[in-house]
Length: 183
Image: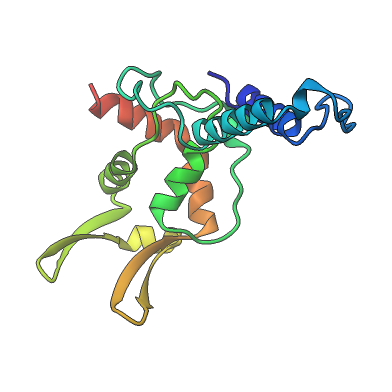
């Protein structure tokens, strides 16, 4: 299933639900079928369903999907905006895929790849296994930040823009690792 085609279909449905011809951008006449309340409600419903499918993908196919992979064009769409936790980086990478039948990149696989390459290590902190950057990881732009909110204080590992570029630049190495250990 092509994500770009779904997005375009969703945009067309949304325009029709609003009483607008999606091709010309013109408001349709009052007596047009699109302005029938039952049709409008149906179009808004389909619009919401398509938005959800685009956002989440189709669940039911989880283990039957196409193995995760991205084209160079898809990878080139990754936006480097700020330092992020690894979970948000993986989400941004998964959002790049156009084929909704493709499995998602898994956070645990990226962590395992980073651990195997001595970029991250496991430290026991307060009887919990925590992922922390090695000296190599720190030099590459991984940092632990202490977060204080009203309820608690905790650490989050952030990955710099430079490190995000490292992940994208070494994407084939990551995929090779996943394919090697996944078999």
